[in-house]
Length: 329
Image (cartoon, rainbow, N blue to C red):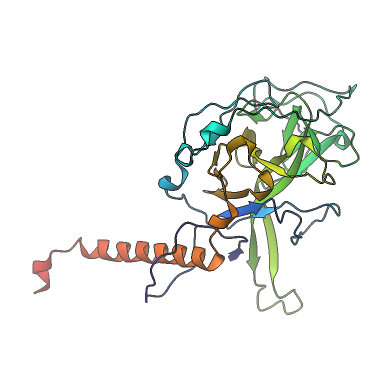
């Protein structure tokens, strides 16, 4: 079984090594606002709108800690009633630009007769009523289906995080999900991105009429990235706000907000259309970098293969260290 990943990303290139290089096991994913409308192959196309899906290999491992140093600077959030930390790289003199407060365009709130406020409830509690799934964004993941209330809007990209449910796949047993971070108390326009893997297998020899390859998609996490200032997709100033990303985890059946490190000059008042988002560590690490710091895929593959080769060599040498040299003579 093989897995295919897109948009590899890593730090500096490694030295060349003559030993055989195995298949890489650690990858990263980058998303750029400048090419956000580039089409990506999709198994289940929902509409003709731009696709924001993110895919990564299921063998992702932890990255180096030096790449993601976290500062504890507190930055006021304009959109939420509660604060959430956004880490800026103070070494690049970015902390001085965090004083701006943007005038976000509020979306008019619409009252719903069936609205049930679920934030603040204890998680893992099954409710004794059924919901009308047509009134919710249904997000299908590997281990669960996630529902977030969908206010009426022609763009179909407005989320109301005040009411959310989770169910086992394709069932009607609704429960309150785990909410691990403060959620916005008003409507938010978000772009949905899938983080998962493709498992490609070959059919058995005794089935010659089957397709040459069988591909299965596993969605492990979903990222909901806010539209900057809640702008519509058709707005000439449209950009994604990579500082505000909500992560839905299939394994824990929870929703949280991503901790993002910003290393782009300009801080909060920068031009966000040039942001490049790097996602690593199985979708747990988020970093915004300038596009010029992006490594090409060849560099990423060479680095990961070199690291894997060194690990294999260390395992081999570790076996030899268990024997006494005097016994060889």
